[in-house]
Amino acid sequence: MDPMKAQQLAAELEVEMMADMYNRMTNACHRKCVPPHYKEAELTKGESVCLDRCVAKYLDLHERLGRKLTELSVQDEEMMRKAAAGSG
Amino acid sequence: MMQQEQQLRNLRDFLMVYNRMTETCFQRCTSNFNYRNLTMEEERCLDSCAGKLIRTNHRLMGTYVDLMPKMVHVAAFSPPGVPIVRLPQCWCAPSSKSALTPHQ
Image (tube, rainbow over all chains, first blue to last red; front, top):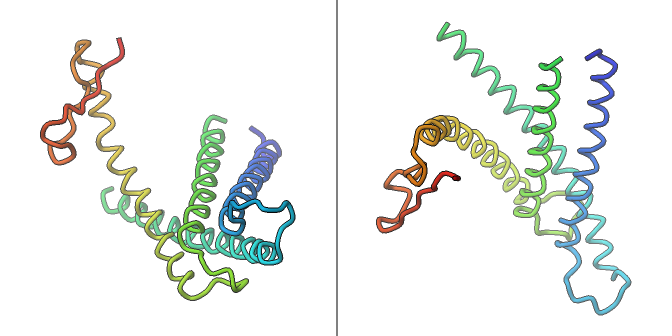
């Protein structure tokens, strides 16, 4: 597979994952902010404000988790390298 | 080429896990929508949640990798109608017959 194709596939994967994240965020924020009473179709002010804050928190969390995952996977790789070096 | 496809598959799996983790930890840890930023309590909860989920994943993977070959081996060499796997005593109630039978 040539590098261009690999890059293109990686870009497509990223777009797909962002879309997946967006869908999960939508579901999560709807569950957190909009109680299932459905007395009217319009969003109340409280619900709207909650949704704004919900998106901000979700994206903040997404970023933190990404950093933490990278940290831990770097630690993992180092551990595995040491283990391989030790047993070799 | 195979290696690159494998790498792409691994990347896809990793990103799915990432998304699912975000959703789970968000659901369980955020409760205070009076503020736009995460509160101290929420941050603490999220740190713990992330650590636990990652370590859960590692442990499950380790145990699965340990047990799966034995299950596959027993399944391949069992006559039909005989249970594929007997769970260790500590996992099942004494009276349960929680064994899977191979497909005919």
